[in-house]
Image (cartoon, rainbow, N blue to C red; front, side, top):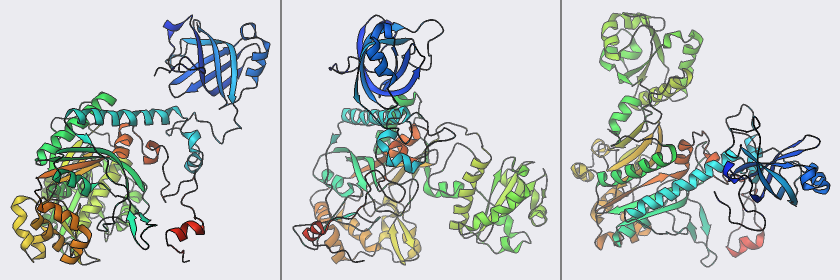
Length: 595
């Protein structure tokens, strides 16, 4: 980064190199570190571009400036003028881009001072000891000074720049959509905003621009994109933020493959530019049903094996009643897992109960038979089981016998747990996958009705359209959608679909979601009206920018890629939000707080 020359600086603190030796320069920034060697004072001066070493020699800068330099402390802001010199043989710092040079100061001005900060912005989140996150969020403006944090936000900017440039070349227009809209309570909870001018009425902050981008396609805008803030009032989760950023895309006159090709090209450009890493072309595809069957999840991490193996027929042939009476029995084979201590394998049963299972059975493969655990029950079918599961001597087999959703949930989570606990080496740094053909609906046992697996505007597969007229629950559950998720290393970074562009089909889907005609008209009348006036086939996707940057930077906490994040409970520790407002403000929006 080159500095715009001002009275405070001619260069940035990361700009000067060996070729600049002999130049007179002026730098400005924060005191990163301070060393007083008696006759000489050394200051590492930092700005977002890097660090440059300043040297205060009383023979060059004069006694007054030298004395002032001795009073400098961490995080003071200064501007200093001087001449670029070579550090000298053996004194270079190869860890810094500016490590060959230093600036011999002739003049210095303190621009602002600082008390001792609550922590110094010189650590990495991967260090063994770091300041408490609550402290870092309270003093976020100091935490943001960390070079690691600044690099993350620089990468974030570069990614959004690549997105705009790449999509712009393909003919996408960036169009803003409203933040103040109406509540459509078919997804997560909305953040609502009271209207001052219409007592008792509320806006909602958008969970996504979904309907607006569809309406832009109806309006003939063909290719839309937007890097947009979205809002969801969700229950606390470590990997979620109440407000988040996504890249939103929509295209007219496309099918699923067209959208996926655009997204793949964009991701390929990002990974190549930021990491110099090539993404497979094309990215592999897997149907939802197969992903659940093999990995117990719709976002499988394919960097390692351990697929789920269906042994229901074999299990039903044993004398083990838990197996004989279960609707489904599956296992995973943990390579080398026989070395896991007995206490640890026994504890897995209680761990599995936390995911709804009645328990979890294990046994160790000795080559041609099994030892420990449920060995006496499975040894009579050892040959079939070993061949079907692909087990080898020294492996651990873990079984769950239950209803299919529980079997898949528990073994899917166990697969990830074993990979973490045994530190299984990933087969690839990045394992990409498109998951397709999701169910259009899922049954909500608590509410005893169908809900959308993605959202109510997702189109069903053409061959499954007749089932929308069925009153048979199993037939409706079997309807597949034109939805697709992009997954990398077990993280879903984007989800999209081809949308419903016919009013009659949209009304049928609403009906199956238990939204009657009156409610359809009240909540979605504008959409139904628009679909009458010539809607093209269209589809799109939303890519989660925060999670994308987290993966690119190899970070584990989504708050480390957002400049001003909320805590897991939705609190802003720096601004102390949410907070009460005064009675006058409440009266103006016709609200009274009831405690």
